[in-house]
Amino acid sequence: MQLTLWTYEGPPHVGAMRIATAMRDVHYVLHAPQGDTYADLLFTMIERLPRRPPVTYTTFQARDLGGDTAELFKTAAREAYERFAPAAMMVGASCTAELIQDDPGGLCRALDLPIPVVALELPSYQRKENWGASETLYQMVRTLAGPAAAAAASRARPERAPQQRPRCNILGPAALGFRHRDDLQEIRGLIAALGIDVHVVAPLGATPADLARLGEADFNVVLYPEIAALTAQWLTRNFGQPSTRTIPIGAAATRDFIAEVAQLAGLDPEQALTEAVSRSTWYARSVDSTYLTGKRVFVFGDATHAVAAARVATQEFGFTVVGLGTYSREFAREVREAAKLYGVEPLITDDYLEVEAKVTELQPELVLGTQMERHIAKRLGLPCAVISAPVHVQDFPARHSPQMGFEGANVLFDTWVHPLMMGLEEHLIGMFRGDFEFHENAAPSHLGGSHAGAASAAVEPPADSTIDAGTPIVVAAWAAEAEQELRKIPFFVRGKARRNTERYALDRGMPLITLETLYDAKAHFSR
Image (cartoon, rainbow, N blue to C red; front, top):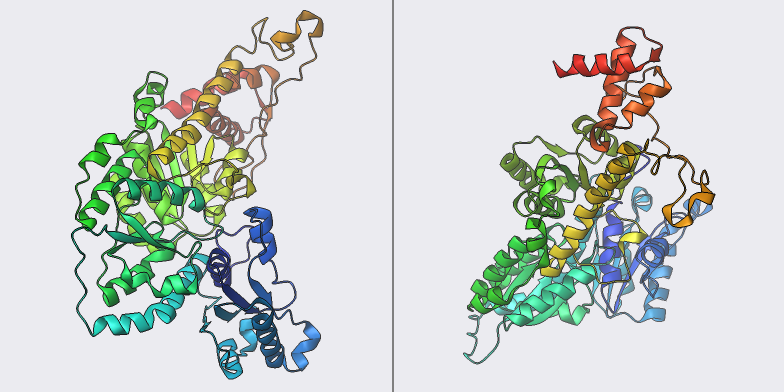
């Protein structure tokens, strides 16, 4: 393991919490020491759920390690069943409790509870959150739908009556997922417009009884492969249900998704495709957006959102992808294949410092990433939009803000393009900073001349103190006229110009960067 300030994913038992919290009539008993009890923080403070997550902790302390921690777990499990009366229970250990090897599954079987109990073995020191969510959903479905799968294997799958509407399951939406709630609403609407019934949504809102009847549907819609791909494969093997492969992020991918779903359901998608409307496609071709063509974009996130974002950026907005990466090592192959399409080197890492070094090297004009890339871009003075978990509380908005479907395509246009437009506006203000009407000390125009000098001067972001990532340097001082001239350089290359000039001055032992030094450095690096 690597000590780090930030992490893209939590340990696997956090993934199990996400499945338990998404479902109904399920309780998760977690063998964990005092200090590992942060489920309330994740789900009520970040996602702002109106209820506490269904998680009970043993909360043992250091002094308990000399006693019987196994009995502590059995007591917590028994009391959780008596208090919450769940229809099914999940049991497991946190990364710290895993070290004492108390075997929560075996201990819970000894209690002989009258409900299904799913013992989760989640290797905390080899795997992470998304894998834990995937494995938990798989184990729950395998336990609860397994009896139905055995019965289905002994008889032929019944043919659907001609008048009967096709049915599908929607797999993947979970608690603490990036816009999962809003995506689900959009996809439900698309599926209903095709004349298809949604049989079960899992895990979000599903009960153990719902999981038991997953095999009754005709096919599965997989929205988030990181969570649902393993379960979909099991359903295919045991019930013969095909699954979708297209992720409906972006207008073009949504049209492909509609066609794929219609094919699986044996329906004609023509009417649904004819009625499909997305403002983003026209907006992207409008005169206000044409100057954005060719903008250099760096993309990083979970594999599903990163690959989809790269496709939308290039095919729908006319951007140029200069970097593509993911922290989802289980889906590294898919990201590498996508990177080949754009001629870039894939970045597969869960170290945010590597990501920061790559962004600094590439100097893109827009960063599409996670909460971490938002902080990185802010430090580097680059526009940024969040496209993937991990996210902050502000990425669980009260408004409807999907990423999928045609409305999701509209949201993508707004959240990706507007930072670029605002960046251009800031650059124009910088260009006219010396004008009598727009200089730094000019008051806002609506306040009149009597307030001249009231506005504070614009502050240039602090200089980057590195030449290459991880190599500290002594930065030469900037003369006032050189600093003023630097501000006239467009915002998206200003950081690179500053670093090149400081490198030029350092190599030549110049303690002060003058206007002449700035021009000499520009000529030197232009050769």
